[in-house]
Length: 418
Image (cartoon, rainbow, N blue to C red; front, side, top):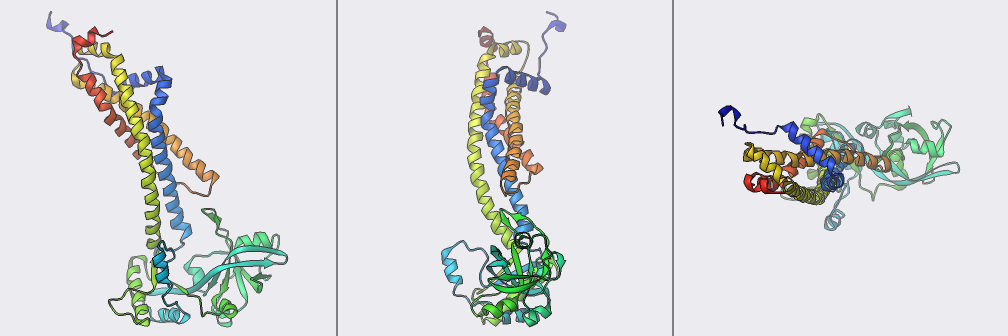
């Protein structure tokens, strides 16, 4: 045989291997669906969970805690308590008083703004209409600025209102829509817990947060609330704004020293008050959502594992069905590496197709959950790419053994196969 007539080694390029894999999937539709279903479910679960958690993180950061990067709160105890023993310990602490607020306001040199507040739940009435479980905000005049409360009509409470304990209030849009529809509420009277006040402002509509309305509130001067109920039993919350977000820790430390001095705490004693920044809330939220994420990913990984095992099984069946084809290709000069690469590309193609379907279904599932529930979602590119990468990794890992088995077939024995 002349050199020119000798068979040349044959290699399969990427596009050809992908085309063979796709045609094989199409030729065995039911088997393909059963092969892909594990990868599809696993990737879809990952994408949906990541999208929902990302959406919740963004929503919580911007609308739930409502603290800017340069704002922090001082209170008797943390806003969120997860341990009964901690709660019992916090009940023994001294309450924060108006004198504490005035001391921080007068002594804190790096504080830009400082306000004080009390909160609770009340019933609001207008005429025969009533609205229950309204969020009461007994504030000093600085608080609306600290919490970025915008108005669509009227004005906020002022120092004059605070000093005179004026019976005035600013109301949220829920009160307007439910108790005073079709009329201008400014100048009208509403009653909170049957105590009358004149409406001087109307808040801008904010919608809801995780199923809870952000518009069912009423703002009173802090002194007006104390005039009716006294200030001997309830602990104040002090909210302060630092000069800048970059220097917030310096301001926090200054307020901490002021309060430790007022409470006469020795240097080796823990604080008997809590200081919380937006980072404190977000860290707690992310630890909770992170735990949920890990559990869900672990469950989704089971689906990916099952999907990978099914892919391995199908690839082994494919190797058996195509033993003669492998023998022919080896006889024509294909090397082990060519056969190995062909079957790895095929297993990867199967898993990537499943991953792509899973990404689409995961995004649709996240959007559907957001549509039928108050949970927000945010699909990010990195999660999509991560889902496809995971699917590709599953295909490569579980396709290695079948591909290796195909590459090691003896061409003579393979050609004898029927």
